[in-house]
Length: 396
Ligand code: SAH
Image (tube, rainbow, N blue to C red):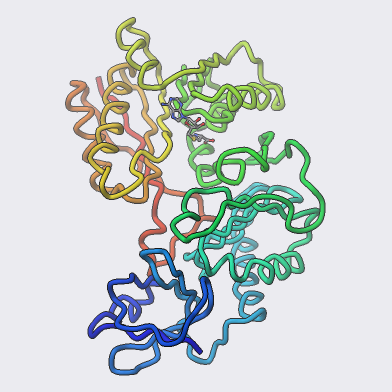
């Protein structure tokens, strides 16, 4: 067995069950593990710590599969981990209230690099790390036995794979090819999802609970949905009795889906404006023309891609929040999010607070929001806590 010996004192994070070992913590690698192969981790003084997957190219040189010395990493190991993750979701069924949800949430389900989402009768997987890639065949085989589905589709077409020295990869892994779009149901509403080409694995499943929550704030209100994608928040707003909704997104394709999703739920497309363009620009135009809304949603893409661009990302968040505060009507409500894992919650809260101050609006934080419960956060993996949001209210 290949072995990794850590430098003195560098086992502390592993003793706290954090699943990553960075290259800087390693004293030596005994043997010649290939990319993704299982290695045993030992402290400097020779104590067994964990078994994990070796990543030859990444700064994160090893991701732990198991801290239990008796547990071998084999097909049976993956079967058990998958089973546990799936059972957890079964227990959350009523809270999830959808036929589209995350079955396996990587590190937080004890399977680093493995993401599996269920969209009705199809599963969509991402294998983000060398270890996940190494065991791909076994994982797909086991999950196909545990969950009855028509097909399993891979969407490992993400940049993070390059840090692991892996090519992007997508296509059918099991069963049938999925159709061009799949219809899913979420809290009684229907959505078309393109699992082959849509963002992430097709839909922002992590925002499900927040979309539902939004619907309780909008009765008789005008709603501006910034970064609307396929209209998730908008359809929920219509369900909640919004009088009219404006979607803004730079992707025409996403807006076409948004329009279809409105019709699919038998709402009138006359209640919905679709604006294809840049949110920053749109918000400035509203400010300059004094156009206002009762409720605004800001759910931008990840503005902070690396620690180095935290400041730049922070400025982006500040800009859109400031503009949103300026164009909210008195008593208006702002749903504001950051999905940047590298943006700490308290910093995000400060940015939103500063934006209100600079906009000269007297605002309050009403609720803190996070990702839906099918995207759990392991207590030993704070990095899993990436989505944060606030519901703010303007007082004047
Ligand atoms: N709220 C959505 C998910 C938003 S994802 C949901 O619940 O489904 C972010 C969206 O922002 C994507 O659709 C992307 O096309 C869009 N986008 C990214 N940068 C943009 C910009 N500068 N202006 C407008 N839209 C942008």
